[in-house]
Length: 312
Image 1 (cartoon, rainbow, N blue to C red):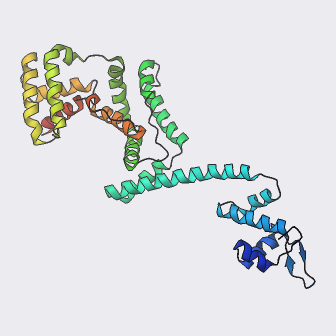
Image 2 (tube, one colour):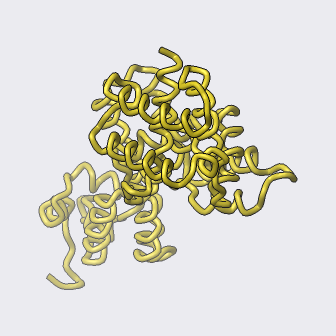
Image 3 (cartoon, rainbow, N blue to C red):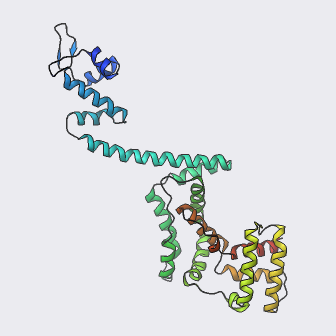
């Protein structure tokens, strides 16, 4: 085979593996035009046409459109330029497919209904910029007032949730819950209140008045209950919470009744609102941060147990 060899359309088909009708289509489109024709009018192609056809087949298999391939063959674009552009486009497609896979796993695992499935799909379809805007709107709406403490806002912004390109099903579920949470006005008010305590490391009045000994005992007992898997809303939590309420009532010279339990819950909620602590847990999950057990606040469990008793 040399530069002077001419090939019939059937020979090109055998050498490239492309059907004759496909080569004829490319020829009629002018992408790989015949070099000449035989006296009988049959198309003939030279070595350059063969190489163009082989490159065309390769680029088509890589997913490039015919118009772009035409520009490559005409040397208006380099293969490297086109490859880079298509690689970027494939990256986007791959991220979307990975995200859809994660959503489907969540739907399958949770047995989601149609409405929840649509919500998850809508929220995860948001672009990275749209997700950031959602969180920025939450930040501005929560800490955008002149009275807001800049240090508090900086603390919350430093832990901005950012869904990765290939999220796990747990991260998708956490992001969906988080996206719903930050749009809740009641939650924003809770965040404003508790974040002030958390950013400044302030001690609650009930902590200072109860004393370090009782507070350390409380943290120990609640930590033990959590580690034992005791549900704060379940019956097994009753003996733990009854004992703690009695001890606090003695210190504050109060009656350990429902009113006192409600007061205790309100005091601890000043800095440890369960919904706010849930927000931070969701942020950890979405960002893929390791959850360190001994850094998880014990007060949300205590508050839930106190509230459960009052509601009962």
